[in-house]
Length: 140
Image (tube, rainbow, N blue to C red; front, side, top):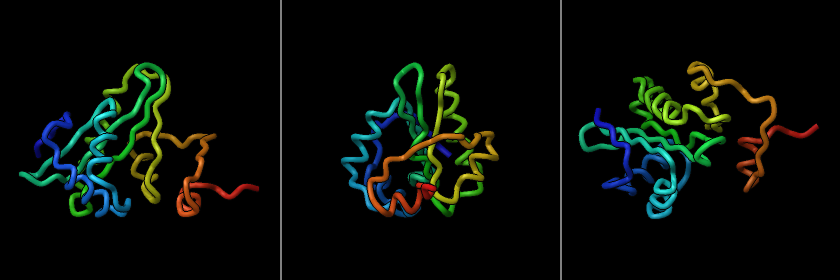
C-alpha cells in the first residue's frame, strides 16, 4: 500500500467514484478537489495505481477539529485501512482541545472500537429530509 499526504496529483474522478461506491452519493470531482484542498490534513491510500481509501480533517488550527470523509473501498474493508487513516489523522490533531467526527450511518461501532466515545450532546442542522432521517434523533 502506498500513502500520500498531499492533494497533488490526485485523480478526483476516482475520489468521486469511491464516494459513490460507498453510497455517499454523487459528488463532482472539481468540488471535491476544492474541499480537500481546504482541508488541514489529507491521506490517500493506493493499492498499485488504484485509490482504495482516503480521509481528511477540518480545523481552526488550534482548538476545534473534525475528521471527515473517512472512506474505504468496500472490497478493502476489514484490512485495517480505516484504522490506519483514523489513527494518522487523529495524530495530526494532537494538542487540539476538541476533536470530533460524524460517523456514517451504521459505522458507529467501528469508531467505538478505536476508542472514540459518543457525545452527550451533538446537534445537526439537516439539509434535507433524507439527512434528517439518517442522522437526527426524533425530538420528544
